[in-house]
Amino acid sequence: MEQIIIDIEYPGHDAKIKQHILNLFWRSDMPIAAMHIDFGYIGKKSPAHERALAVFAGEIPPDKVIGEQEIIAEF
Picture 1 (cartoon, one colour):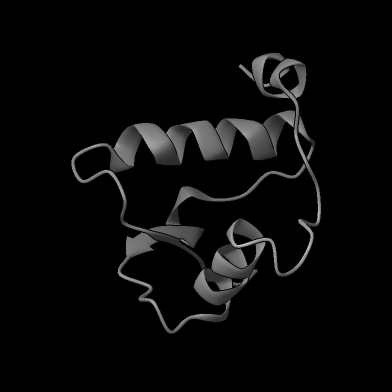
Picture 2: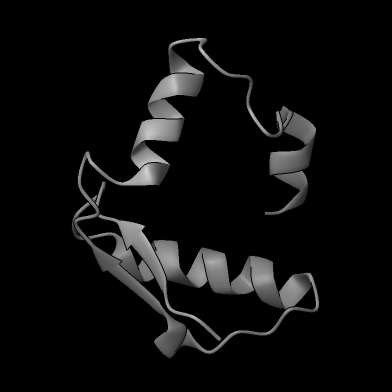
C-alpha cells in the first residue's frame, strides 16, 4: 500500500481527521493501517492543488459532487 499524505489544513486536529478517514476506509471494507496515513505540507505546486483550484475556478468539472445526505451517512 502506498502512503496517503494529507495536506495540513487544521493543525492540532490531525488525530481526529486521521481517525475519521480510517473509519471511512474500514466501513467500506478497505482496511488500512494507520501508519499509511500521514500529514504534511503538500504545497501549491502539487497536481492535487492545481486540480482543486481548476475545479473551484470552473475551468474543469469535479470528478464527483457529494450531497449532504451522503456526507451525513458516513458519520
